[in-house]
Image (cartoon, rainbow, N blue to C red; front, side):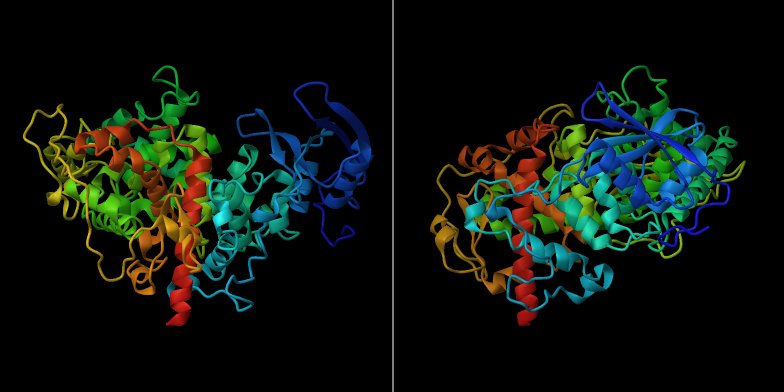
Length: 612
């Protein structure tokens, strides 16, 4: 039977559904209402209207229903669409359907005039549609245009000292369905990412939203099809897991297993999810999904740092197979970070150095005097995408905002989870290669110390030197001593102005030139000529596909400029300074500054592209 909106309820749904709804405005004393509905004529909108009347609510509230997970535990699932309501009626209404109502925050709240974001389609250069580079637009369609056209609107001298992030409350339950159609198909992927870019995601919604951000679903799936898709991928994971479990007597599998377990035991152990004894089931789940990935992805295998990348996903998903699927989705983009040739990481170092030189030449040349201008001390930042630099919960916000800055790239058919090519009795050559690596059981931690950078330890492959890492300053001291530092000159620098770069002037803050924009503290201002801006790679090339990451790194560097340059620290102090900042950075402060810098870059690049 079809409802008023043409949605067909499942035939197995009962004739009458008894509902018990509880409104939570705090931790105690929930207000409860009971009522009954005919599921075959009651729509999702009807349910919301009933609850609005019963609890005297406006339209901004979060709705979820009580059900049981695969382990039989009670959990609340979001109720966002007709498909969700149909599933709730079918699976969770005996003897009655339990609904939880939580008051949300209006997305139309009043904000200061200076913070108002104009329509994304309105260009800051006039009414002409915003243009982006061809290669980028082919991938993202209008995704980057919407982000660019919006974030550049709010870039003005009045923003100095104000937070650029968050501009909105985190994306909540009641708002997510605005980006879906009646069947649950994601119809506004770019708008959703833009919304997350400005405010992040409520923790209760991360499990749903991260799957979208990590591009694991084909774009045309309905809500019901996504549920079936995850069930299918769960079975695929269990099949891969069972296959390698049968090979535990294989020497190669055992060696990779030991390497991964050693890393897992020191991954985020201060977080409650991974704390406690070494037999913590969450540690075992993290180990299982990493080993499954290593054995089913022959060209990538396992490298140090992957446990850091997988840990936040597992915490959010709280489900081993689902976390594995999301990890595979993320590694579609990140796997080149771990290739033994090191070409991608070398390119990222090069781009970050170019970016710093472009924005603050004096700072760059100071690092050059320390032989640190190759930016290798930022290795951990680029490899792990800043995950370790923030407190764990803050890192979740930074990661989702960073992912939302990227164009959507869903799989055309479905996400591949890998293939296990290893069979019983195979792997002798792999074992020889693995055991030839003397450091396989002593993987260096990802501190910023240069002595850890030249080799990338991977499971099943010899340590591959990163391209051009022979230029890193070396030391003949004891391994535990500080690396040799090169002292900067005692006198103040006097730099020659080179073609394409304008001198840094604080007075430029008030220049009429529209290309002047505020950076960092406000006392570091960059005004770049068109020729100077053209020296930076295009968005699709900058940072090897993740340009916003470089601006996050740049924001951290500029924030510490006074500490580094004005105090004339030596190389060892530089390394130690940034190492001490692990898990201490402020996400709001860093993201605000990064967004300002990113907006200026996108605006200027678009202007240059349209001029050419």
